[in-house]
Amino acid sequence: MQGKLFCGYCGSPMVAESGRSSTGNVYYYYSCAKRNKHRDCKKKNEKKDFIEWYIVEQICEYVLEPKRLEYIAGRVVETYNADLGNEAVEELEKRLRSIDAELDKVTTAIINATTRGVIDRMNERAEALELEKADAEIDLARLRVAAGIKLQETEVAAFLRGFCQGDPLDLDFRRKIIDAFLNSVYLYDDKLVMYFNVKDGKQISFIEMLSDSEEPGGEDYIEDENSSSLNGGGSSANR
Image (cartoon, rainbow, N blue to C red; front, side, top):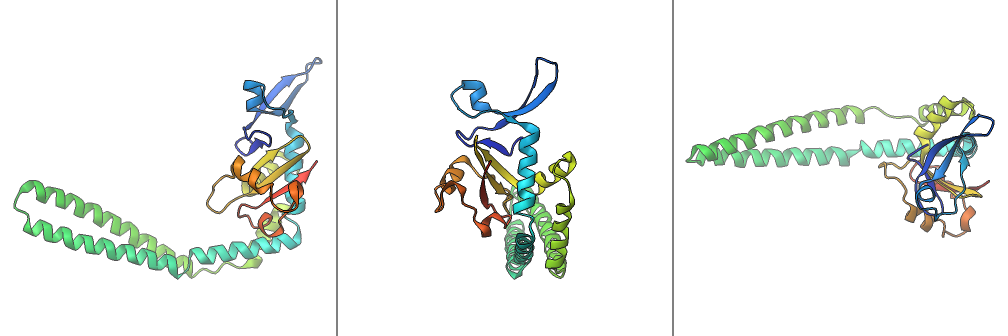
């Protein structure tokens, strides 16, 4: 969870700590990094095992339920097809045309060059362009092959349903769910705000979370479309 769990009051990371009770038992918890260092945040410590179980349980109950699961599968297929569409192919083809045009200019410059230094520099540039062109041609070939592979919603849904079979108490299952679905969690003493993985990998910032909390419906809103799209949606849950 470290790297994905943050304090809802100040935005600082929640860091994993351990301690020992008077009876000698070791216990594990998450604490606000700012409170640890400066003592000026009110966030209480959270039991590590409980909060991880609760987050995974919420994902399984509210994200991986049948209606949302089918919606997620549809969005995954939609995004996959968009990434492999004509626009991406045309962009690579445009890049190749640009490389060819620059190669023509470099070739002309080599022919007209009168000094060894200029010829050497132009040859180096031509070699770099040839390598770039080769890479672009490989990317274009792969994209054209991939574009012919159609992703089916039923296949994606079946894959997602595989996540529904685990036990939130199992540590390996928890790790799998957290890695696959969770972008970030902002933790208060009485509630948490969860965000699911964004397409471009951008993590939701504290400022963005505060802005989202001002949406109609207050702190406890759950936006069905966003929260189930794996595209940066957030949901709030009271504890």
